[in-house]
Image (cartoon, rainbow, N blue to C red; front, side, top):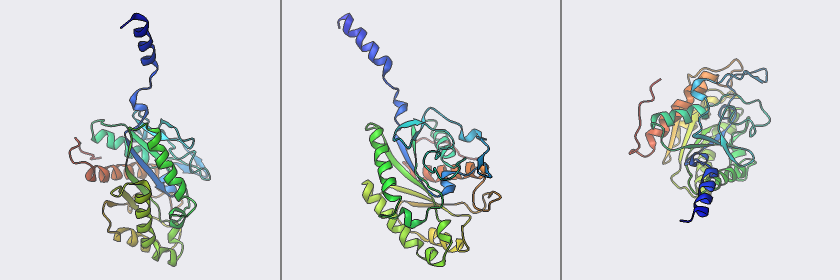
Length: 269
């Protein structure tokens, strides 16, 4: 190889982005404000407290509103759930727990899509949020330059549908249809869907929605129960520490249902 060509190659290699800039394992975060994160938000102001379990890591990426991968940090949904004040959610705790359990392993990409006060009709195919969810998921994979795959959807929604008896009783069939449509439109018929059974509601029919969530029997649909996690003074949103705990619960659910050959360690608190 001639010296000029060798120098050119060295120069080019110096400016190639490291592979960690493009995640390999991609997770969609969708639902309402408890997925977007209100941990640490009081009187419409976030306190800025970031627990150790939620700190940034160069191997944890976030898909921004401008459709670009960047280093993930709290609040994950700041430019997505723009009509609410975002704080700590379960996403960063989830990602750090997965990486810790895998003894580092593949880089992780989080695609925030959650919107506060959204109902299941908003997320259903034809609703105001469905197209954006599909579009962001597809764009995230494309931006990963051929190296990324969607591994799971993390879903926390249902509080809005506890407002009326009609919405609560209709929740299960709408949810099942949403999961089927999502899998078809993403071309992932076996996509893992991890839902959170709600702990609070925006109305009196919380238990009907919870029963609907827990009664879903579809392949690769896993339920994590938020009941018992600490709720903030507004009686709707999880506290920061509860969000950390939920993230670890979601990680345990994912690791239990992902490829068994992966090397993992315990996720005990």
